Length: 89
Image (tube, rainbow, N blue to C red):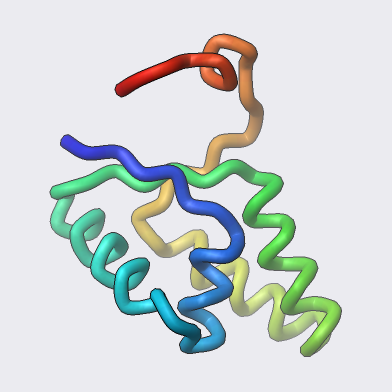
């Protein structure tokens, strides 16, 4: 099974309907079907939250956070040196 690391820009592209959002949406659909695994670091999620908070306020930011939490994305709360420096799949 392929694994993907998602960053804040990828989710922001989906939220804003930007170029490349179709690729991210297709990955999310594949993850829903359990064809791929998607990981995202908590700091990237915080970046998405803060971006929405700054532009639209706390209620919209919380709404986006709840949406992300329902997606088939495993949020990694910490990162060990082993993961950080690991090479290959």
